[in-house]
Length: 262
View 1: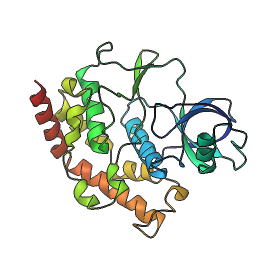
View 2 (view 1 turned 30 degrees about the horizontal axis):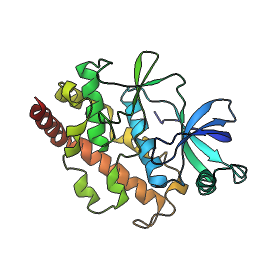
View 3 (view 1 turned 180 degrees about the horizontal axis):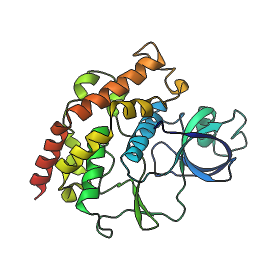
């Protein structure tokens, strides 16, 4: 089934979230809800939004809990009255489509010492992050929230880091993910082979293609590696399909990294 992403219009800038290097913010939209907005004008540009979109929707397809993602449209006139010059510049360079995550009001940051995660769920999240080459779920920065007593995944913008250079990107697809050694849930991830069989079956070629097809053309227009937006999408599809087809490589790396901890 083709995933659906709504488009909202940002109506009010509420507050910056300065703990993120990309300066995300809480903002209100024309549907009356609050969203955490990731801006295309921030340091990593649209690539971080592409990683967030692909990572979040793959996680959702696998049955993991992720806040709703929306395309967040920023009007040219928005932010002109913002007194902070740094924020005003960010908004100026972010006119057009950005990415929003539904704001989980009252959520608390996941703490591995306080919250228990069963081995199956831990293995599912570790498998996801190996697929996405997501280096950003460590003890120091878990990028997970507890909301209504359930575990929610946020912030996949550091994933798919091969797209920051596009050098040897096809080779990168079949490499182990050595940074998994720092994953906050690695000690609990004892069911990797079971999860690998399940998740590889869920992420069919059709499902990967339907998720990658969500990337807006305007997030790809300033890239120079390929000639068309569709060629970029095909590269993301090829990377993910290859990585899934060779998932035993990152599963073994995870098992070795876990054994080294014990």
